Length: 130
Image (cartoon, rainbow, N blue to C red; front, side, top):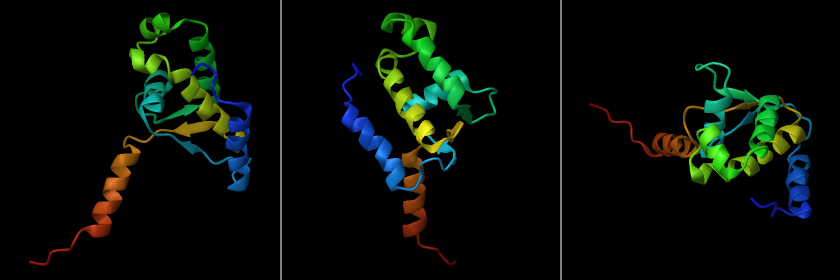
């Protein structure tokens, strides 16, 4: 928020993609969390889709930037705590998409915490024999 991310931090962000051999890999992004879930609700083509396109996200970000915080809350049905962070969150996803050179962002029904809990359960569960 408030453009507090320095150019050096963005450069580090971009460099990470190179370091991890992801630059221009064209792999889809998987997003999780409140901001991307809200973006999915607003932008998904149909109720059964669990992805958004980078192009639709870019256009929506531009639409958000055209109105002030109060108008964002009303016009886009955003909670106040979401309305102030959704633009910078969008920029993170868009920048990642540009680095990877991908067009789609997938948003699964379950979140990261759900996936970790499932993996821990599988790892530590005991198979009971009756």
